[in-house]
Amino acid sequence: MNVLGIESSCDETGVALVSSTGSGVPRLRAHALHSQVQMHEAFGGVVPELASRDHIRRVLPLAREVLAQAGCSLQQVDVVAFTRGPGLAGALLVGAGVACGLAAALDVPTLGVHHLEGHLLSPFLSVDPPEFPFVALLVSGGHTQLMRVEAVGRYELLGESIDDAAGEAFDKSAKLLGLGYPGGPALSRLAEQGRADAFALPRPLLHSGNLDFSFAGLKTAVLTQHRRLGPQPTPQQVADLAASTQAAIVEVLVKKSLNALKTTGLKRLVVSGGVGANAELRRQLDAAAKKRGLRVHYPELELCTDNGAMIALAAAMRLQAGAAQASKDYAFDVRPRWPLAEIT
Ligand code: KG4
Ligand code: ZN
Image (cartoon, rainbow, N blue to C red; front, top):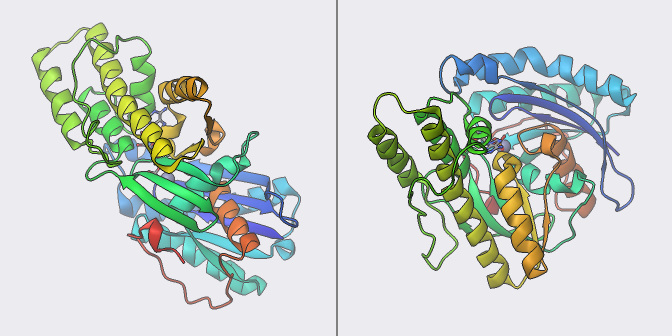
């Protein structure tokens, strides 16, 4: 079965083709991505209307590119999948509309996919795919969640952020340090040159006894420390503050993930979402796992942030597992707010 997947929930247009046979992990045949980061950079964040218009421009050329790369004709596409939510309503509608229009023209069914399920399953496309069950740490720009994953479609929320997401904490702190948008990768690059213990920053909810997170207070602490440095901090001071910020976020993520493994008795952790690309997070999780005899799985670096491959994969895996049925009812809708626990 050939599944064409379209991602358009935020500021990346992604298209991919995966093929599944039997019960094996579906194979990624080709994927293509257009990032709008440069376009939104001037505004310091994503402008939803511009995002939607750019998705319209990019999605069909990307689909053509993917089919050509995979050597697959439109007639060989069996299902068209799209991100149904969560995300920006207008941006989601572009992907959903194109997917349903294309599917109707081809007389094939469509399937709307949950964006976070895409992230969560994306490590199955890596060279070291996980096995069920596992604990998932989902760390993106909009979400920070720990989940117990029993099988495709069987997700139990163990804890989540009560305010900002980890990616947001990276982005907002980076903005305060003058590192632009989205600041996560820039902050983590700068942190390589700084001392992580230079500034004492809070580790919110570290000892809360539950698996929830809170990152909103961190940006205030970063702002306070940054102000204390005066109007012209030295590059080393900024690097130290970046390293200290990263250390605070990473310590909480690592500690809570280990607690989640302990609580559930599971030995396998799967990390996904944009912040999963963070090198320090990977270093610390790998070190902790080695010490405790645990396994950690990550998506390939290029599939950590938003992409079409994870959407095509999630659709193919849901269909394979009988967790969803693709439909020829082309009256689509999108769900800008959609808790993962609510998918059926
Ligand atoms: O999963 P994603 O692409 O989009 C959402 O679904 O939100 O995640 C984007 C987030 C941004 O906040 C970005 O700053 C962060 O992931 N990010 C990183 C790194 N790469 C991306 N944060 C820290 N270190 C990185 N290397
Ligand atoms: Zn995402």
